[in-house]
Image (cartoon, rainbow, N blue to C red; front, side):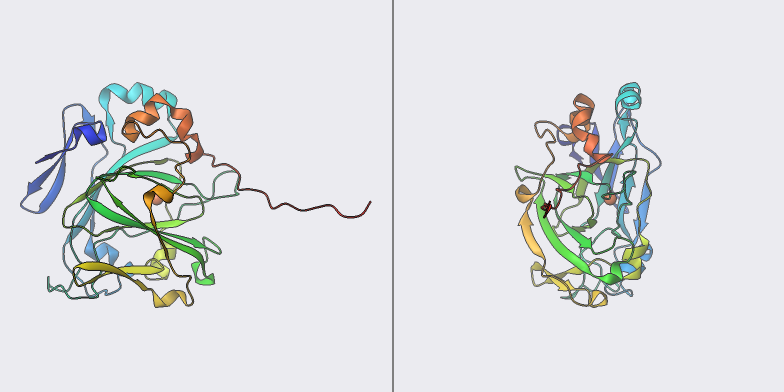
Length: 282
Ligand SMILES: [Fe+2]
């Protein structure tokens, strides 16, 4: 049993069961019914759709909260939702026979829709609470027509032991989480509760712009051929990412309850910088 109370700010532990790893919520901690994602659910986005192990790839616990905070959550951050996810470690393979080139366990991947003002898509805040993982961010020319091409691809490697384990999915980027360590990974996130994530573009393109595959004892990125020409991914540390002024002195669950205004950009992100132009003549 791995107690995450200190890192999450909520009484939650990783426990080992007959079926692998699971989260156990302590007294007073509640969530919506946990949703599993099986490898069969990810068939449309797998590099090798024949891969059939491990069976469960991750669990999503949505709307996690301390019962005693429900009133405060309703009054100060009613537009936001706090989730905790548990990912299994390992490589996805056919019948458990792992080979080089097989993909590491990953999430399905998705885009967020545009905000009400329509100038960007919704961002999202993640904290890597346990384990080692990476995020792939990709900025398409058109969020809903990914076949038109990708502007930028970014790979951010994060370890829960890093000083900076906060990752903000920037507006206008799709994202996918990939588990590259030998241990389970737990993330927490705050996100606007009003939208539905867009999974179809990832299914249409058979995953993100890059697949993260096993190469020897390490990971490597491999372009997804369905995208055509791709920019090389920028592999950056999490410290290179803009964290939009989010407090980092306590777990994001409590940071948001203490300073909800610092998370308001998740509902209405700042306008992107305007292109400067000069008025000529007169
Ligand atoms: Fe998301």
